[in-house]
Amino acid sequence: MIAIPFSGNPLDRASERRSDPAWLRAQAVAGLYLPFWQNRPFIADAHVKFQPWRAEWGDATCVFLGLDGEQPLFAVDLPGESEPVLGEGSFQEMRHSAFVLPARDTAIAGQAKALLDWHKRHGFCANCGTATQSQDGGYRRTCPHCGAEHFPRTDPVVIMLPIFKHDDGREECLVGRNKRFPPLLHSAFAGFVEPGESMEEAVRRELREEVNLEVGAVSYHATQPWPFPSSLMLGCYAQVLRREFTIDGHEIEAARWLSKDEARARLADTIEDEMKLPVTIAIAHHLIKDWASR
Ligand SMILES: [Zn+2]
Image: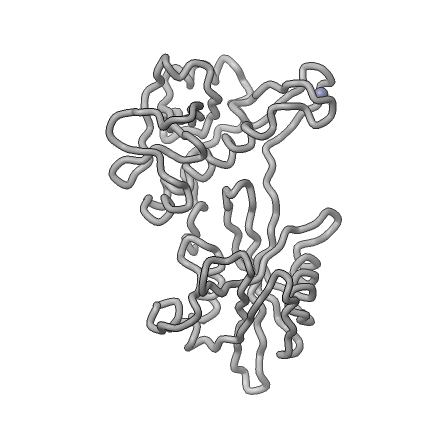
């Protein structure tokens, strides 16, 4: 198994039990709570820091994360303009935290962030506009007026590395530079899967639109939950039928083929120039690395 950050959550989500309000109330009493403030988890000593419930948190939004052995774990979204003071530790930006936290803490904090963020932005019924109520520990909201049920969203995004195979068997991958990327970064290509579209079709459409590549076989490699705010990254390889490409100049401003040797050297940061490849928290890093090492 490849360890992709934000995956590998060890908690038992108890999805068959969390719909029982009496069971959930008992868990809440025995529970520990991971505080969030402005989408940031509370962190101390490079670990997420769960705490006993505090009366001052009042009716702050709470979600059930799962059971860690016997221990029920929740997350709580603290309101307010100024950072709550909870003793040793501080609220840290989620993306940055993924670099310092252990893998299990990153996965748990990512689950909590995606859920709390959804509640913050989906408080009203999309059908009739009435304020909705959280159910099942936060995995469902129901409308008391029209009865509609609303579930936390997960948006599929294809992220793919185009591969060209020469007649002699050598392979190259194409990395591109999106205009919105940080300076120097080149990465795999990505885009949201649209309604009525398969994963393979989305891969083909995006690569045609962004770099005008003709794609043959598409193969799935791995997925990654990406809580910014609620994506599921579907990592794929796309075999391209010809090496020529044309950047669209709209989203993509540059693209380049890399050999396996060059990709490995760049991932190891041994080349100092105008190009950087994605960092380890991104699935694109693993797509490139796993291809280059096989
Ligand atoms: Zn409604």
